[in-house]
Image (cartoon, rainbow, N blue to C red; front, side, top):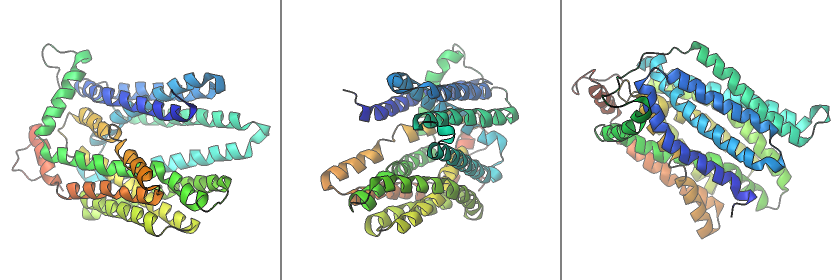
Length: 400
């Protein structure tokens, strides 16, 4: 039976499953046509419409709200595939880490500004509006924000000719499924890229789990266990989330510069060591709100950098003309396995009744991801990708 408490989780699971099924096929269609920009516009438009329509959802219309949430989430995931696939087109290899980092930085800055405005709206309730209306206006503003900045980007992106010709006997409607099969086959011929994806699957799941469950952990350990008022906990967590948005802006820029100095792979390894340190600190040392603020600031500093550099590094390890297909697989490795970390956390909580041991258990994902990435020859991965698209031979050195 679906309950009010489980509806959001079930809707999220449904949207993730749809993305796992759709994203690789959509990426293939983009690679075989000149529709990448149009598909980006299409799915962004659908996502914008679904988000804006949430304004009209009230209590009795919760099923409509669920459908709109699923549509918006799937559309966002699809749009991100095409968005990421533009990265190799708009930047040289030398500038890719910096541009990817700057993109994440601006995303955190924009998200922080909109969140700040919406918090002010919900808190102050100008004109005596109800809390419900303030929340619905916040959802509407998110859709309009997406529409405005999406249109800004689309006006400046250029469509290119199809990267590849359709094979005989195939059409745009069927190529997606064939290309999904071919992409998995090609990954076996790109073992270093596959190894990176496995590392990313592990450490990114750890990152996403910490982000998703940090507020639950902090409320439990700093407020519930100590009998402190939970309304104070909500205010504290909201302030932390807002701080993370703005500190992550600086962190993404900083890690872009670190990558320029030591390379993207080493910079990611540094970030993973810090992530491991964060969960150790949360387990053994976190006692006060000030310490929680320091921990949140540390998370923010490495959050954008680890995401941005993973994207830019992966973009250099895939064959030219296959960007959208491979970024579809990249998104699958993120969304299709996002249950692993929460499952580990839940099992440890159930077995030990300790949120601290549960947060510490996530270190397994960071260590495993660190080790696999450290053992991945990313330079060879770049050579393999260029050999796959025929631009160089395996013996030719790849750019750093």
